[in-house]
Length: 239
Image (cartoon, rainbow, N blue to C red; front, side, top):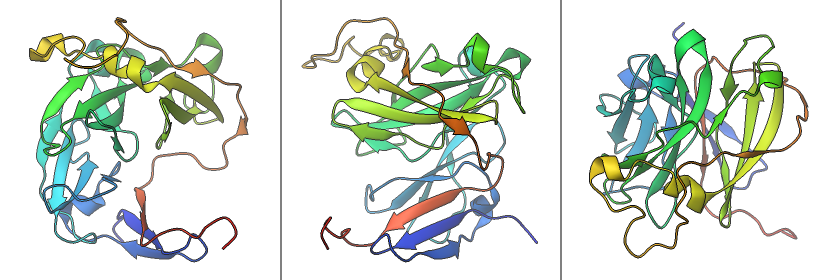
C-alpha cells in the first residue's frame, strides 16, 4: 500500500489513537504541524518535491493537499536540498522553524528560519551559516556526515535539541534563542539588525553547545512523518 504521514492523538498522554492523513500532500515525508491555528486554519510544513519546503493549509487535521513554496536552498551548506526538523516553535518574534540542509558530499547540517507569527507564509529571516554540523569525531556511522533532529523544545530562553549522528547514535545540544535570532540574515531582507526594540546580542553566528552522546539509536529516520495532537489539557502531576 501507499505510505502516508499520520497523526497521533491524545487527551491525557495515557491513551493514544493513530490516524492516517489523507490528501495528496500526506504521502510526503517531513510534515510538521503548527501547534495552533493561524488565520483560522491548520497549517503544516512539508516537502513535496524532495528539495524545497512548502506551507500547507487545511480546515481539517486529517486532510492535506496543495501547498505553496516557502523555502528553497539559498546557502552552500543546503544547496542540494532542505527539509524541516519538527514543528515550528512559537516565539514573541515569530515561528522558529528548524531546518536541515544537505550540501556538498551529502553533508547534513542544521539551520533555522523565522516565520511571521500571523502570516507564516512570510519568511522574516534565515540562518546563513549552519547552527550545527557533524564534528570530525561524529561523522562516521551507518550514514556518514549526517546530523538530524525531529524537533526541539523551548526551555525559557534556551532551545534544547536532541539530534541523531550518522544514523548511529543520539546526542543533545543547547543554544540561547536570542543568539540564534541575532545570527540570522535580517540585513539581506532589508530589516534592521537586530530588529528594532530587541535586546539581542550583536553576534554574527551561533553554534549549539553540545552535550555528551547518550547511546545508540533504536530507530532511525527515513519513514513518513508522525505528528502528535494534544486534545485538551494534560493532567496535573498528581492527577
